[in-house]
Image 1: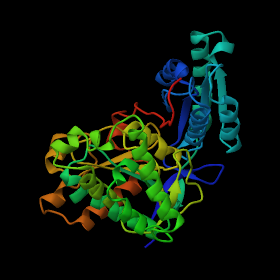
Image 2: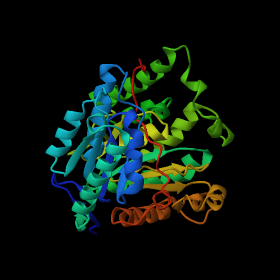
Image 3: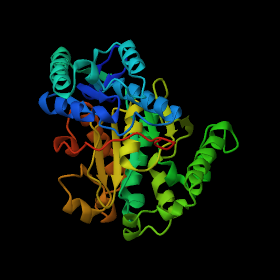
Image 4: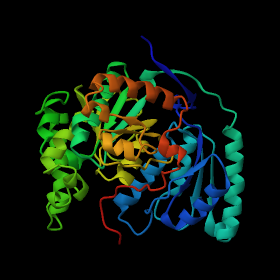
Length: 392
């Protein structure tokens, strides 16, 4: 059986589930101007991060790379860059690389324009032009093999590993078998289960991919130890513990279920795109939503399946986030935030495979334009970029 969806074909050949103008502040100091533009112009979304200045060169390049890949996301039809003018990020490279992808892109400089009010007016005019320019683009059929799915779990409890993560694992396997791309992360939630993932790596646990899986877990643990802390002081979170998860190892064993069973092809760095890659991949990310969702959108993922037990309602500005809830009580309480009730597995009403097929049918609809509940509520304002060094 052939599976397809309707999406927007981009000049670089990728296909988007949404057709938005991204307003990208190149530095935190430009956020207020970018927000004012987005409030005024329909069809825009903003990436209001907290980076871009007084950071180490490694992180300034990291921020620039992430913003470039966000701008090149297939869900973005055009880009407006809002630059202060003296930031540490490379706004010229940001403009040039997004422009090279074939998308319409404009840039304004707050300092050159004479300050906030003039920049807001110039930005509104530019964003309006871009929205009108891409507004007539039409969806066209695309095979499911062109899909890139990100996966995550958050606000987890015991039902996450027993139900909603299992559903996502089922969908992940199905998409990989159909020739699509699946990206999963949350390196902090591999701890105690990294050996299981490494055994699934192409080339085995002792091969380059298997060794890299062990390396990223060790690096994440060392980040905490360098400041005299143990990762287990923050993981599992208080909410996880209240939800019945006793240790990071128990949490990890439930979390990695969502990756399914297919071979792991490789490990992507946080800033890296998944363009041209097929099958199942890991992206080295933390677990917190603002940073991991940003990293996943930067891979080029058109959408995300997000498992939750206690109820995590937020999404991402340009990447639809489908919330799959494993806890039937949470779903009943937060139905306006949850897209699919996997709690029926816990109550015995449905099998994992049945809810997995429901999730697959839903993701095809979302790829073709159906809104997720967090999109309809515009609950997607909190994003950020995972950096490695201090603010200086």
